[in-house]
View (cartoon, rainbow, N blue to C red):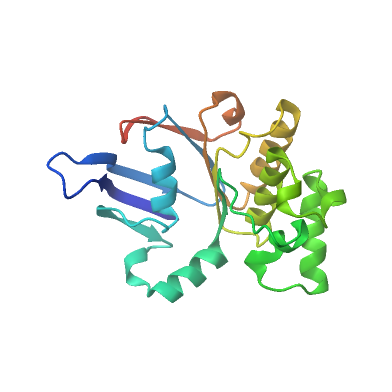
Length: 218
């Protein structure tokens, strides 16, 4: 289980008035469930994802990955554990411009043997990107880059998948296909989806609502 207890994230710590991104948030994500996180802009949705992913350290509170405090891992071991257990699809994609689509998808595996390539190609085909395997990110549309980022998040069969606005750049039909793929993955993996769009979360097992960094409704 991925769990956050009492998560608080503050900015402007040197100023008299601090800016709160999160305020004492408790959150759990178990393999086998899809959880949506919703709220208005600035409510702390993306901050929660980044803290749970171990990419941002909370001001206070603790994140547990499989009952182990993330702070207990040395930095190198944490990066390795995160890569092995989690897949991330960020709103800004973070694709590597000089790599091809296929090479970008293979990054989490850090290998390019036959089985790995076949696995990556199957994901690209499933997401309608197989024919663009040799293109580079600058030559893709925003929606195409989004689909490559999703394939990269799924390629290592992670126990936890975290996606920040995964359908924001996609047309309605493609967004529905992506959500079907994520729902299918949630049978074995925990899937966390941050979104402002309630309609794409119809298949979520539960939805957590954030307002001003606090959980208001689950």
